[in-house]
Amino acid sequence: MTPAIAAPAAPPTSRRLATGLHLIGDLYGCRCDSRLMRDAGYLEKFCRECVTGAGLTSVGSLFHSFGEGDGVTGVVVLAESHLSIHTWPESGYVTLDVYVCNYTENNRPKAQKLFNALQTAFNPSDPHLHRVDRA
Image 1: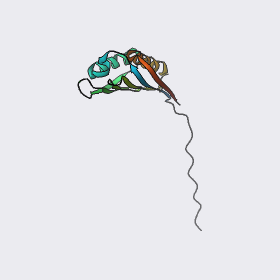
Image 2: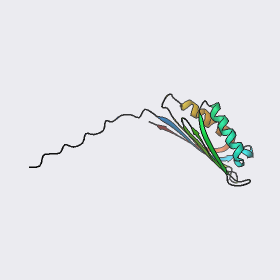
Image 3: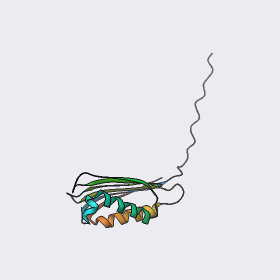
């Protein structure tokens, strides 16, 4: 007779310690300084300044221009997570993504401050905004 094999114990269920906030924006009809839409170096410097102004910690960044007068894509990697941005100057359109974790402290207000600063700078006539609380 073969001995019965016990079923493996179920892993303990636990709530994640690092909750977070994910802010997403589709910004239509942007009326802003054209350098924010077309100049990778300018946009990178501006984003990094906004990160610092919001009290978040940049650990690196990479921004790419798609050519003279064309759009820019970029990311600022944060100790708390990331900021990503993509511009389409020919359409006056920007996608914006700010995500922070709350591992050591509640970074939600800082994320909102960063998102608000960027949204204000792009001055969209028709912003479509989404907020996802990560639990």
